[in-house]
Image (cartoon, rainbow over all chains, first blue to last red; front, top):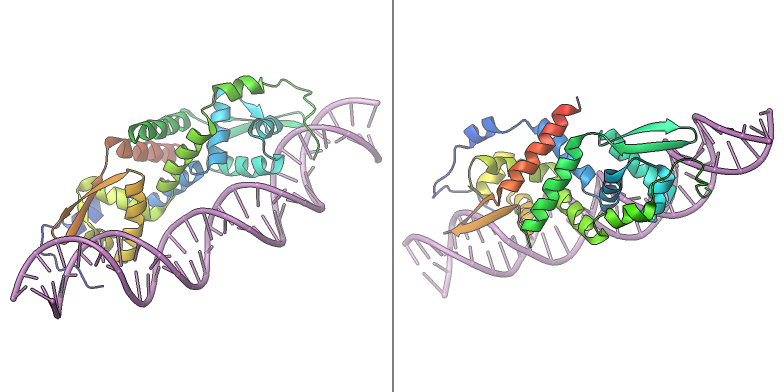
Length: 115
Length: 115
DNA sequence: GAAACATATGAGCATTTGTTCATATGTTCA
DNA sequence: TGAACATATGAACAAATGCTCATATGTTTC
């Protein structure tokens, strides 16, 4: 490969670099979306749209093992997308804040615009 | 592991299953977010916030090889997140629609709420 | 047509990721 | 305290992912 010889209009790269969020913020942002980027986790989030649920019910609803669901819930919890409360032997999970719903519906809207 | 013995309040799983989008839609939705879930692609998208850019400029801006950027642009293009136009030897990429900006700002907003 | 430039793409490789299995932790009740 | 239940977690493994390198495709200019 050879360097770009700039024989056309180019933006001021330094100016653009100045305007962009710093690399660390963008990395954190990509991590947020990476959490949404798995169908199991998306299904869990949509299940929680209706009501809070315990782990075994989520597993039954999705037809997955309790272990697999629990592993994914941990990722969702770490990303602050769900919160939980213990009630006896069960642990109930729920969507953490309204941003989750907003982000999901934005994604759905994008989908509907691309077909 | 043993089955859940339902000794507490449980939601109607069949009703919840009925209300949820079908599995295929949720898979497609997760694929959209998976595309956002990589810091290189996020950096490319933010670079394009300011103006359309050719591949070599994006590569220079991000300090990456032309090949790496081109591979990621293909993924962004397939997901309809960017569009492109050829002008001579160069190919200029731009954000495809306003949903991209909305989704990114939703993600940023979520981030700012979690610290 | 040939050379130079800009971009696209396939193969290979190291890393990451999601699931399974086994087991640990935590809670209730007899 | 011990047994049963509900959830969490570490290790292992197969599959997916992102980058590099080499090279192909496409465009302009001589």
